[in-house]
Length: 310
Ligand code: GUN
Picture (tube, rainbow, N blue to C red):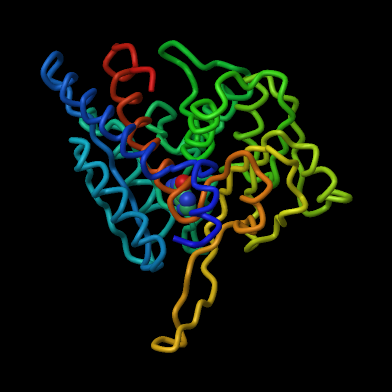
């Protein structure tokens, strides 16, 4: 453990431990669905090509699903797969009542338009929450009932950790750094629903440091290693670091060794913040746990059952 982690241990939001608890609750819910309704939630994960990072993610998702009692089927397609071939597989999975969740791992090879593929997924099975039906439901606040939004996993996990740490978020100033469809935009929607005052900042924002310094809640999701510095953080703020950046970390034994850092300069930030997620061990494990939660939610709704409240 680094010196700053040890010195400020109570400021660390332990996403790994939180995710373990959530995964245990999901496991219990899966057992109960099985026993009471004969329902076995299942997830189809589609990977096109051999991108090494995607292979690791897909393997981790499959293992986590199996550990929670969710059946996970891998569909691995050649890097030269055409868009029509992938759409045919998506159509087959849409039509299969035994498949409750479909995830097509991104990025896709250049010959395939990701928007066309996401559009083709049945919104009820879209456990990534990327389909426009789900983004629209999130934007309009359709969050409960059989036709509620499936919410993208990373922002869903961030909100769970924030509410666990802070309780009621209403009235807090939130700054979301990054405006991606996967994280920044849905995160801003969730924080707005939680009655925060939300600013979405990005690479063109003037005086980013001053904007970040306003935040009671700072979400860093820009994908730039350690961009957010300690003096960008308001004393006592809660910082959620979504970045997962691979950077060189050479050692005497291994000059090519790589390590992971977030979008926040952790050692400087933890000395100022009230609470912060580490990288690794913060947002990442929660994203996978929320994918499992979404799969169970989707399975319940497809079978006319109320989804658990996670
Ligand atoms: N690639 C990186 N993150 C994600 C994700 O959350 N979902 C999918 N489908 N692909 C990804």
